[in-house]
Structures are given as structure tokens and as C-alpha cells.
Image 1 (cartoon, rainbow, N blue to C red):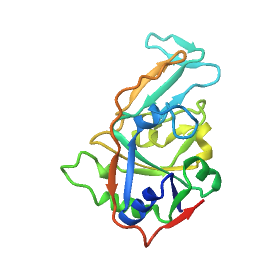
Image 2 (image 1 turned 60 degrees about the horizontal axis):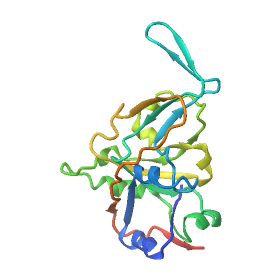
Image 3 (image 1 turned 90 degrees about the vertical axis):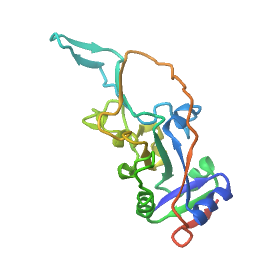
Length: 219
């Protein structure tokens, strides 16, 4: 399966091709952007369960409470996980939104193998817990199952409104960021106001020259 990385600047596309340079942004970067329906998503990396008819809660004292308009939310640590966003689709429509220079990578496993070669004990990032895969666009009424406890799943979850992106992601976290149950849990009973904290700078990773394996498309 090929994946496609769009760029607004040709120089950035050539940096990927000639030097294997990948820029990974923290999830907080996407949450902090304006919610424009393209790159900005204040709920990126958050699983929300808001069933029709309300959120049913079983209390310790035996009571059963239904919260009308309530939701259960599980979130990864937005500053500790960095992602590289590409698409599974090559199209002029995506190029119009994300940039006219597109690098086609026919073998995403090549990137994964080279990224895992970066593992070392002193690194602040855990390449053994590297995550990659297609994004799961889900309705809020879908039951979370065990996904709520798995950062490796949450980082690949987005609201269904973004399904047109047909996104594929590579994600790497700081040490322990991908550990089971390393998530923040909340119950919401109404609209919430996003809290914007300082956003870490992106990280640049190099996986060596890719020119022999990729193709540059110009729109």
C-alpha cells in the first residue's frame, strides 16, 4: 500500500526525498490550530463516547444515572506523542488543501524499519513503541471497547468529519507515553472550552536518502 505526503513547498518535499527528513508535530500542535476542518482538530488523539439517549453511569452505591448530552473521553498526553501525517490517497483535491507537491512512498514499512533503527537507550523517544496505521474515523456513539486504555489506538482515532483525508499516521512517543492506561479520562456534561498550553517544537528525524524508492508528483 502506497502512502502520500503533501507539501506546500517543493524544498520540503525534496528534503524528504534527498535526505529522508521527516517533520513530526506533537498532537498539541493539531489541537491548538484553528478548527478549520483541515489541519486543526481540537479532539485529535481523543476518544469520545457519547451514545444517543445519554451516557449511562453505574454508581458504586448501585444507582444508575443517565447524563443527557454527557460524554466519556479518553486522551493521550498531547505533548508527549509526535505524529507524521500522510494520506492513503493521491488526488488533486487533497493537493489543493495540503499543497501541490506530493511524495509517493510505495513502501511505508521502509520508513518504519529505518525509524526503528534509531533506537538507543539514551533517546528520549521510544522507537520500540512506534505506531503506524490508517486513521480510524469513528462516530461518537460507537462504544470504545478497550481502545480507551491504549494510547497506540487513541493516536489513530479522529472524528468522522475528517474521513475525507484518508489519513495514515506514524507516531512516536517519549518514554512511557504509549504505555497502557497512560491516558487522561474525563466525563463531560456539556460544552467545554479548550485549554491551550505551550506547544513543543516539532522534531526532525532523518531516515536517509529515499530518492530510489519514491516518486514526486506536482499538481
